[in-house]
Every structure is written in structure tokens, then in C-alpha cells.
Picture (cartoon, rainbow, N blue to C red):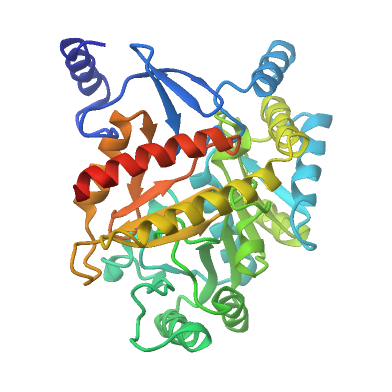
Length: 430
């Protein structure tokens, strides 16, 4: 697409959607087609997609598309009718989790699923207070977005308490590591619990992304996650694992909480479940789910539909039949090792972190002072795009190169990305 045509499309977009709707890259990209891990722009140029987790089993996946079309051509109604497929999908989904996860509330978005989880915990405990990290993100409704805003606006969100997210790179106390560092963060969590108790809100739940994705994929010290879960339960609260980004074999295991070593009372899933079709879920014990349903009479017109079930089955079939958990673990291990080796040669790459095919590369200013360098991360994503690779920047300081490709990534794609990455970082240092 020519530059004038692109500008015209951008002008139309701002008129139609309103200026301010976010776009990636300094020069926005006009994507028109996808195939597996590859995307194509309006001029036919090919890109390796190293970012999009929604099409977890690949852009344009044939099995998913055929299941979607066949079901839509047959029947799609809301959940107030019996339908075998939605029951079998819910049964299949909960069976992938640990013992004690027994029932599901199906919805359409991760935000909805998180709100269901928060309400479920509040109903079960009779308390209102929810704890999150100070760099969290779990969705966009007024209830859910309070989890993010509470860190900077605590007086406006008295039912939310935040604590510093656990990490090694910039530890809350210098000189600590491993269990001692975990204890320091647990002290912060205990203080958040204390604030909610003192306020009268009490502790209903803690909600944590299992791998701290929006925080920047920090290396979590010691057994912090398991100890945090115990601490919250001792305070009478429940543990919610946000698996929207961490789940569906992203880490090489089905769930992020399996990697970071804890078992939630409630788990939340979204985006990848439908490979692009809106599909999300909140899963818990039957007692918790029925308590929620009895108190709210929850109904979602598009949730628990035959169409969602057909697509949900197809996505799990693809993951299982193609052995994607194992390939994600193997490819992710190699990719992280390769990036770590490169980081050792460039002082402005402070850290390489992550699990499976979810890797973060942290950019800092030169000089070894760990000052976050967001502009460098943005520059690298722009330069990668020009070399045919799509990524983004994220993290608490937006200075982390975020790599989260579809699970169907192949070794050839990883090598293509590394070649482009080498060229970009060599240009910067040159």
C-alpha cells in the first residue's frame, strides 16, 4: 500500500473509531492475511509473527475454521438449551486442570472471566477486598481495571490493595536472593492483607497472572507463588490464577501455575481458547461455581454456545494432536538460550526471561545502571518490523521486547527471527 493510501486509511480509521485507538509501530502496518505463524500486508509482504497469542494454533487454522463454519451452518443458540458439545467441552476443559477444579462458567472475554472470578470469590468469602501486584493488568471493565489503577490511586479503590511484583532484576531489598528475597515480597503481601483487614473490606482473593506477564515476565524468587497462596488462604481469601496469557501450553505446560509452582482455587482463561473466536472461561470447584450461579443467576447470551464449544474442541484437538506442548518447551528453551547468549554481548540488554514461547528481553540505558529504556524497546520493534518480524514492547516500564508467537512456531521461524534480531542489535551498536 502506498504511503498516501495508508495515510487515507488511517484518517478513515480515526473518523470511524475515534482518534486514540491504539496502533502498533511508528508506521502502522496494514495486515490482510495470515497463515500459521506468517502474516501478509496489503502489498503481499510476508512477516514472521512473534507476538500474537490469540491465534495460538496459527492464523487461518483449517481445523478451527472448518469447525466454526460447520457449527454456525448447523446451529448456534444461547446456553438455555441442552447441548452435548458445550457440556463435553466444559468437562474436557476442567479435566486439564488440577484436582478440585470441577466446573466452568463460560464467557467471551478475559475481562468477563476475571470479573466472574472476582465476584465468585467475594460471594464465597463474604468479603470484598482483592489483592494484585502494582504492575498488573487483567481487563477493562470498571471492576477489573481497578486492579491496575489501585497502585497509583489507592484512595479511589479502597477494595483493592497492591504490592510490589516479585522479581530478581530490581529486588525490593538489595543483597537478597532466593528464599530471603521471596520473604521480603511476602512481607509486602502481608502488609496488603493487613490494609484490607484494617479497612473493613477483608480479603476475598488475590489475583495473579501465573507468570507475571504484564509485569514483564520477572524471574520470581524462591517459592513465592506457593507461599503467597498459603498466606492469602490463611487470611480467609481465595487464589485466582489469570491464565489468559500464561495458559494453553504457552509455557510448555498446559497452565502457567504448573511452571511457577502453585494451585489456584479459581483459574481464568481467555484469548487463545478460541483461536480468534471470543471464548473465555472461569473454572473452580463445583461448590464455588454453584455459589456464584445461585447468587447472581449469571447469564451470557454468547457464552457457552455450540459455536464456542465446537471451536474450543478444535483448538484443544490441535494442541494435543500436534504435540504443541512439547514443541513449545523445546523451541522456547533454545530461543531463550540464544537470546541470553546475545545479551551477554550487549550491555543495554539487561535480562532475558520467560517460559516456553513467552520470552521477554529487557532494555536499559548504557552504563549498567538498570535504568529502563522504553525508547530502545520501541526502536527495536520498529526495526524488526522493517526486517519482516513482528514483536512488541511491554512490562512495568514498557521496556521489554515481548515475544509471544503462535504455538505452531517452527525452528525455521525462530532462526529467521534471530537473524533479524542480530542485524538490528548490531546496527544499534554499530
